[in-house]
Amino acid sequence: MKTMTKENLKSAFAGESQAHMKYLIFADTAEKEGKPNIARLFRAIAYAEQVHATNHFKALQELNGTPDNLQAAINGENFEVDEMYPAYDAVAKLQDEKTAEKSFHYAIEAEKIHAALYDEAKKLAQNDNDIDGEEVYVCPICGYTVKGTSPDKCPVCGVSKDKFAKF
Image (cartoon, rainbow, N blue to C red; front, side, top):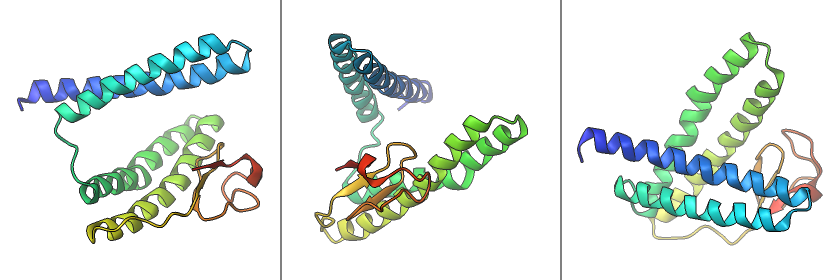
């Protein structure tokens, strides 16, 4: 693929991915404000943006088998832990942006766990196995993720276990 087309696809993928997430967040706000039909519209268009992002990602030819996809996920999580978030956090500290510091802290702690979970899954997938059927719990405040049972309180942000999302 020619460089300019590849870069344009990457940019379009990023833009559509951000729109997808932004519209889901907007939908949650509309729902809380008692506007369920506007929330539904946001969710529908968020799905359309996901379709666009998926098409762009497939066109980039970066979709592989599960072990390779898990390695790509591990690489992404490790980049965030080792480089991206430490740099972002340093700037936030320098500029005394406490809300950003907290957001980056939450993310980096969760990303460490995500990389480990993906690594565990990759070892199984390389032998053509799936992970066990344990439930996965995610903290809605910081993104802390755990398989099995949720802790009484999130070890990162302290939210109670009854707030965790179950997958």
